[in-house]
Image 1: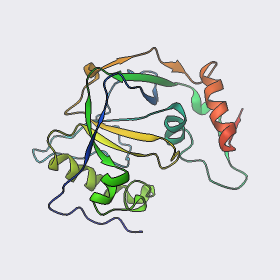
Image 2: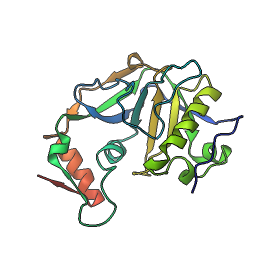
Image 3: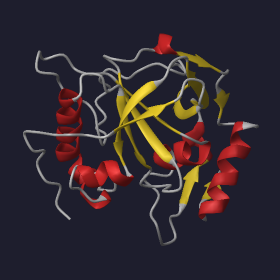
Image 4: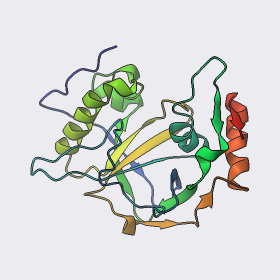
Length: 209
């Protein structure tokens, strides 16, 4: 299903991610647990876009649990079927799983439930599209960011683990200073490796040497 262009007038619905409620993310070990990405050349569903003044908005992706964080990063390129349903342990080298908690309430644009319907969209038109649609989904992120100056990010149901919420935060309205974090858990060896293997086993994916 095609991704429509954002209309000129948007009336997004917002929700609150409460202070203290955990967010989890997979990231490179050299990055801080709550460090925003400012332009690493990798395209994503909602990044990167420029504001009207030309400034690129930094992005931070996270999820409400480790299964969603792992599915959206480590499993995103694993085929749904066939003989290649595996990831290499070498893929985990240099990666970590971190838990961060906002120190204040965060206002997020709701791209699920009534919030998605309010925008006259179905999941397959925005939140469950393929990477080939990222140019058009980024346009929605830009429009939503401009429509609500008080919005600090987006929340939707994870495409690859649709039992949990995924979150993207706007780095011009939220910073690393708005979070407290636990020490990162390296994924290349235990206990991080066991977390990945448990998720992989549940999904029918092999973690191969």
